[in-house]
Length: 91
Image (cartoon, rainbow, N blue to C red):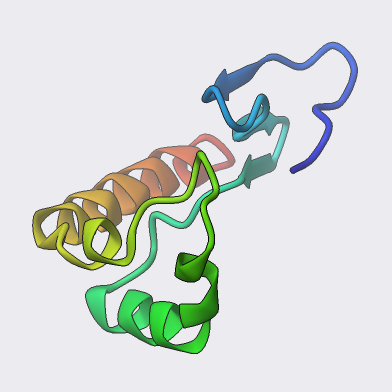
């Protein structure tokens, strides 16, 4: 993960990762991947199959990751809405 610059408030956090996102001036930082497509996630999961052989309290199972079809498009839509608004501010 990353540290948030002094005086900046993060806006997304979880039990596993204290700092998952922040905005400061013209910088937006994310500790997750809203841009991922199902195809990209499948490749990632296949390449790192050994991760799912161990127990980690904050890692989803392979099935939980790849069976969330409806989230991919929603996440990408939210990402592009965010980017449109973020860059609109600089005009």
